[in-house]
Length: 209
Image (cartoon, rainbow, N blue to C red; front, side, top):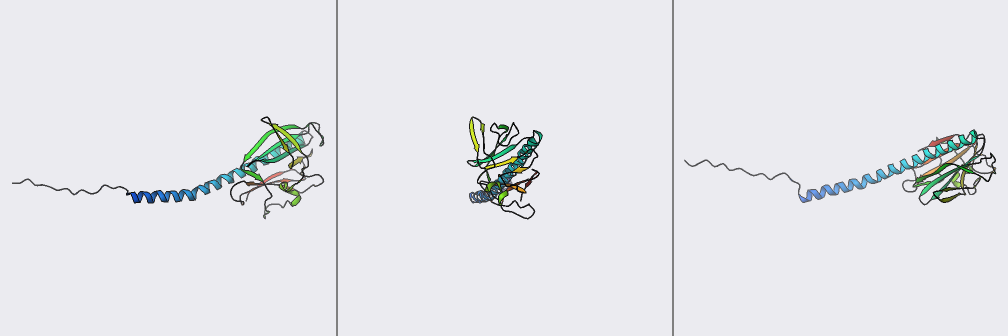
């Protein structure tokens, strides 16, 4: 009797073909191209929000210092490349015209943020042209700071707090609302933050769209 021979049928092992792999890689590339801008937008939104929160805190601290020490405080802003920097000084003698100003806070920097006039919207108090810090041509006062061995002159965008906490940005112009508009250097122009200061009270509030 001949032995029974059993023939086994071989099935091809499951695997991706080269074409299938190329299709998968192409799909992943398309998804990455769609997702990266979204993440960049989130990053710039967070940057502007953080800058707005930081600046609000600096302004509140400056106002508190002026009232607690019966003096004047100035918070100045300027651009450095793609960044925004801020310095804070006070009058040790309590006089607005004092020359011997002292720095009361270290220099602050926010990357990729710019000071701009932003559009008004319902739900946010209107500041008017005289209340927009970014539209100023002459500051209420100029001052200089030295940080890291570098001198910085704040000669345009300056907020002043007086002994009772009131805020001004120009001589002879007491405005109801002062607005500091912040926008990202790169990204959507609809992504912005508005830091508003009450002219009479000096109270600070942050608005985001």
